[in-house]
Image (cartoon, rainbow, N blue to C red; front, side, top):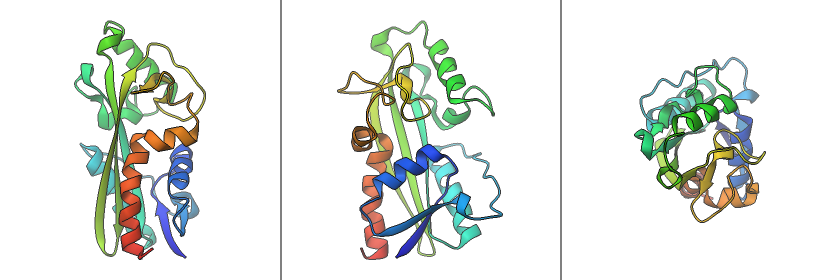
Amino acid sequence: MSKIVLATRNRGKIIEISDLLQDLPLELCSVMDFSGIAEIHENGKTLEENSLLKARRVFEATHVPALADDSGLEVFALGKKPGVFSARYAGDHATYDDNNRKLIDELREIPAGMRQAQFRCVATFFSDGGLNVAEGICSGRIIETPRGTGGFGYDPIFVPDGYDNTFAELSLEIKNRLSHRARAFQKMKEILRRHFSL
């Protein structure tokens, strides 16, 4: 069975990506299964740069085909912030709650009808055959008070279009049908099928 290393230490991402790829006959592992891989500083200016940076570094360190993604929340009333800085919006060591509080504070004067946002995911597969990229977008809006205990990151304050519940209130099954990551990885699955002749 062909092996892929997921270029992340984020357990929430590992669970979601593993679920999204579960029907492919691939052995998935993460950087935590390898010793000596240094923390990767995501200093790219775009989601695309960060995704490529992680996939390339992990492939070079492990010599195993690597799959990375970088995702960001883009709020239109804030000029698409936090974007590439989503994970560290409230500071380098910010918690998910810190980031959510900062975003809610910045939108305090913005009416509910003008809180449109989108989650965007860029997935990169890096192997000795080069690189492939897939993108997914999920549109929605930001609410004023966090709701739900599932998911991670901005999930408690993001309501996807067509739903009344936040990502944190929706089941993983539903989220993995409509999320930005789900949409990017549906495209990535076709890339993996072709690469591994599945």
